[in-house]
Amino acid sequence: MIYLDSNATTPILPEVLEAMLPFLRDEYGNPSSGHRLGRRAAGTIAESREAVASVVGAEPTEIVFLSGGTESDNLAIKGSARKKPANGEWQIITSAVEHPAVLKTVHNLAENGYRESVIPVDLNGVVNLDTLRDALDSKTVLVSIMHSNNETGTLEPVKEIANLVKGLDERILVHTDAVQSAGKVPLDVNDLGVDLLSISAHKMYGPKGIGALYVRRGLKLDSLMTGGSHERGMRAGTENVAGIVGFGKACEIVERDIESDTARIAKLRDQFEERLLSAIPYAAINCSGADRLPGTSNVCFGSVKGETIFIQCDLQGIALSTGSACSSGSVEPSHVLTATGLDAGRAEGSIRFSFGKTNRVEDIDYLLERLPAIVEAAKTTL
Image (cartoon, rainbow, N blue to C red; front, side, top):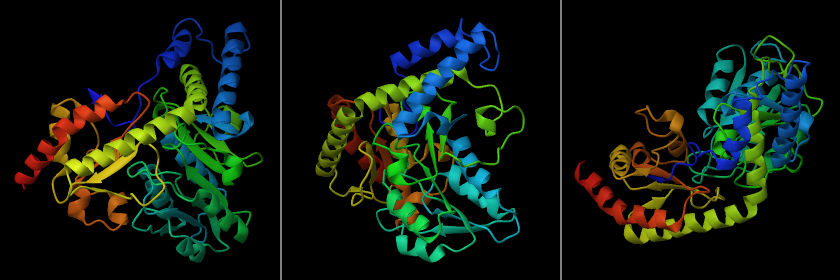
């Protein structure tokens, strides 16, 4: 299998699995228990919290462990909004290209007593700052704009967004979904100026089912769950100790390797795009004019059925995506690509290739030996 779907998930690294195994076997203590097993579990969580905090430039006390990126986005958005009354006055601002974990959460709040503003993007998927400035008002409670897009790789100007928002009113909270960015590009919450930032372990060679939310010191969110006082009262429930250990180890590894990996993966992606456009001249790279994640390439093959390309690649041992993995059952064109101005046909004819730590040049060779014929066959089936 040639795996080119790292934006959907990444394989667990052997070092991560090894770190987790003791906590799936012998070290089974509840970290809230006062005996030796419990204390050891609690101590290990504290060590992992330091590693996760380091990868985003935060303090360990600012990290809240959750079940993944979706819960992290939900806690950031709902936990912020619910500090204000649901009386139709308070506004949440987001963008047209957000992950469904953000967009649907904001839509849900809009159906339950909050105002919603969705900011458009340009042809490269970048948020329109002038429209954002016009949308801000004295009743804005939260602005949630992603750090990088899961489909196109576009990096949003989060630092400029935070400066703009805080320049109007320091009390307006700024959240960014950095699930795709963590471990791929450097992150520093203090440099970005955000109050809340979401990440997930399985996008950075850790296990599924564990994520985190950076919550700026002094900020208190309304918890989504009632129960014990775990995670400083923001996430009730016994901690996923093995998952947290794996998350911490994954953060240590990606932080150690980020400079070399970023350069190598960016070079790999650029080689792929150059060779692809030479082999298939009518192909186009979506959002190529934006700063992008190093390993993401979203390619439009014209008005073909991307699903046909996807299936034929899968049959030949190539794993990729027609868009967000969370939308794989949808028959609708990508909301991200249509927001950038692509028509429905070209959006449906787009494929996401996302490279990661395990990819090599040989993977590109294998892909490009087969892809031109697959795309041509897809054209003839229209």
